[in-house]
Length: 100
Image 1 (cartoon, one colour):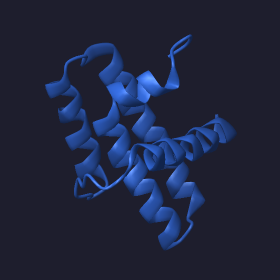
Image 2 (spheres, rainbow, N blue to C red):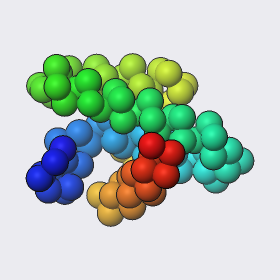
Image 3 (tube, one colour):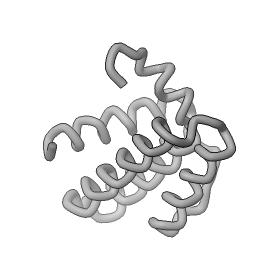
């Protein structure tokens, strides 16, 4: 998403990002298994790229969110504040860059 504001990016894909952030937070607190964590982040961002390119409407982004959720056995919860989401995704981006 070159040349795009990160806040706009987060807003547009908040459903998918929320699931990824929630899973990231739970896994990191649970066992800090970074290899598995980084792979989940990679898969999450791959899903996000697909939703950006081919699934632009809200309903289909929600569908990609549901697929990611089932992949990791997550229950979708609206518990992250916007700042929490941004912080979780910042860590996710850093982890992704480190293994790219």
